[in-house]
Length: 492
Image (cartoon, rainbow, N blue to C red; front, side, top):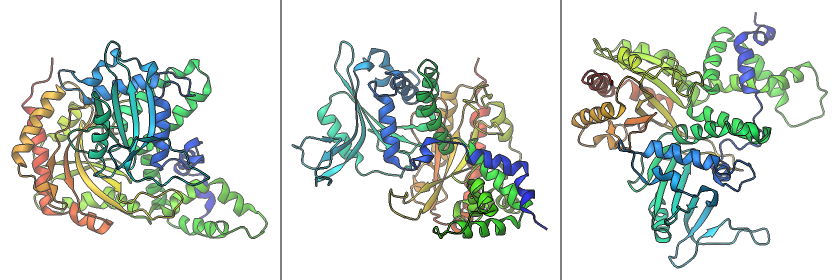
């Protein structure tokens, strides 16, 4: 017989409660998912005159990290001249409304009149613009389009580019996303994991002399980003713990549901009792467990981690599937064809975990992994009850490496992939063929290959991930990764 007390003293439940109940100011203010709030916070941190008291420290670290991700092997490029920029005089403007007519000035930080916003015909809103003087030279403009819930295209980018280049002769266009989205060539893709997160980490080291305020805000924002971009963050562990608890306490959901039904109703004057105390104390963990196995993302994760490898193993000539760190937003695995050494090589060349966990990519510590990434088709809008809809795509990701020259390895791998998949058929969703991504070779994470999946529900995702055509391309890619490694002698 199930007793709620058994659940409450279970170590996994106590760990889940600890993770979900940690205080975070962004959660208290319900700012986690709203893209505009992320933009305003990022712009404030970049502003050397911001009330954070950090001066230009974060701006410098942000530009240095962006430079590292964008730089070519020769380490040349506009942002590599950070030391020549007078960062203390930088002008940072957020949410610049761009007019439709060419002769209209941009409207920066437009204020409402008489409580109502002014009607303006616009061609979009540029998220962040940095104007920075260069010592002994002309100013540089850095435009940032921020997509914390990244969509796959933005038809306003050409207009943003045209406006920036009309006002500044020296400009850099940055497209900031969580999942390394590819955009038109004029824009350079950077990610939260490769730029914003490490810049915050470096800047936090300066907070010790400034009191607890800036340090706390940076720590809370880094926690938000970890949940979005780091597989070993709380959400990944929470997913694992929830699976474990559902298996151990199958009847717990009925008790949790009864508590929710009793105390999620409108206030009706009933006396508070021990059930209320139980519900209010463990509300976050109860709510997570109650919805865990019912929403599409949870169903997809459960099938992916427990059922999919077995189904693949029953298929003829299919690779062995190794599941690595996974959560509802990012499910990671490694396909190992028969006779392949890719799992051995992926561990051999993976960068070792450092004490500060900066390069702790996965528990399996693989140098490459395949990722099924979920992305919102219609992000929830502020102030409106809009149900989320999801899609998925599949990527080959090169993680942190050592004992191998990264540029040589990725360059050779791309050559092999282009030879194998030359015709661009992978641009069609559901084609089961990948597209080779030709972005700059970043020093930490690189999405080298992308399969566009057509799935918009769990059942369709399951069908696609079991398609013989996809299995064939996964095996082919895995063998090409192995070939690229074995062709290259370890770096001296």
